[in-house]
Length: 376
Image (cartoon, rainbow, N blue to C red; front, side, top):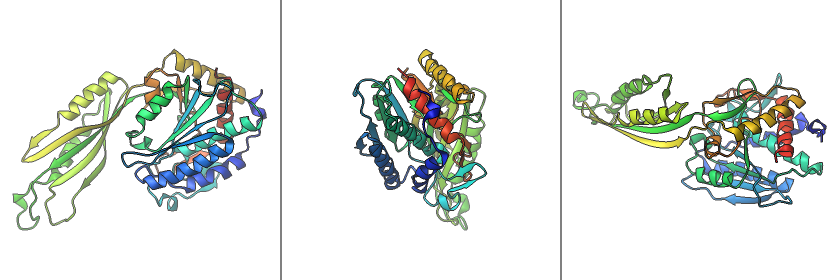
């Protein structure tokens, strides 16, 4: 079969993708994520999958697991793993509305990673319509919490991956359109400073500002960044009244390293920051962690297959390890052949200018279809 003969159409895919983008689904809004899961579940059911809705936990939305009919149903096959949560709060559509301009389609979450998820479904749809049965059975798993480190569904993903031979992750492509065959280790931390409240006007000297202490700590944390391990503070919450010396301040820190040993050392350095300074108590707790995923022979075999398919389509598929975690960290670290970042091309993910390149929709649908029909 020539995958270029499948009737993939850019305008048709854009029309199908639009409702997904209009359904905003920030991670921390479980009801919004569940609405997005409803759209995906319907789409998967319409294609012919058996749908299982898995309840959410820890305050997050639920997941959708879809299994497609196959002569080897229930045997190890291909897992397509994606997330339907985004970093964009409800209302982002007002700032980055759905629109198509100069070969780009804009919208919150369209690149990371609703575009890639939708393209994967379109590949399955066209194969089924053409009466083509894939060598391996296909399972699709969509989860609700990747953008915050997958705290509630890591076990679900790992258990599903263990049942399969290959994992495909349609996260956004690398800047050159290449795939990801490994990812760096990532750890998150919560830092809290607890000071002493006082009136900021007539008793300023009696207080111990948690905000001031945190400001100093932020500079200390980010100064620890080096070639082996990076540290960045991305969230800070503190204060309620400007005329009160702040008594508490909370921050979230992200650390990333190419090697697990370097991340482990970074964890030690972060935890060592806990203590007391100038009557302000500093607490540091470790959050979710993504392990290092290093490419092995199995992953590289899947990549070489994908590279050959890409050549037939007409583009070069490069590969590399990458920073920025994904659920591929978990499956790849388990030793299950995993090919990540085979979703759509684009730029601006996690920003108000997020977009995809519309001409990559057909290209990536063909790539996914090729993989599904040739993985054995």
